[in-house]
Length: 94
Image (cartoon, rainbow, N blue to C red; front, side, top):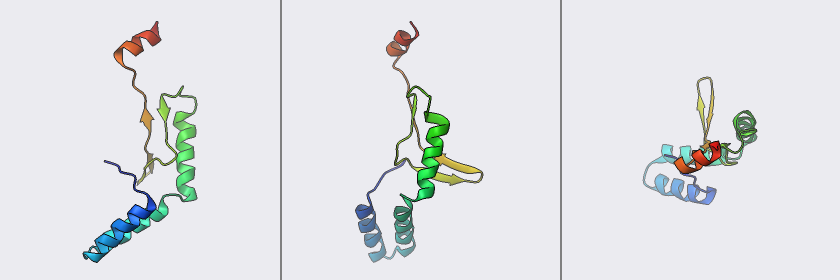
């Protein structure tokens, strides 16, 4: 599951966790919040958009604030993939 939390809310959560003794988790939340708008992140989302969404006839869309996750040989970027309703798909084929 992915949940987008605004910076001020992330800071409040981190402060609450730290006050309860969860310092490592609070640090991780602050680091993640700080990394949200880095140029590298923006570049990765733009690269995914260029590679998959551009020219897809809007069947694939990638939000500007998409979640990203580093992997061994690349990065996962959250995307939306369009699925037609059964009736609409049949209309599109006709």
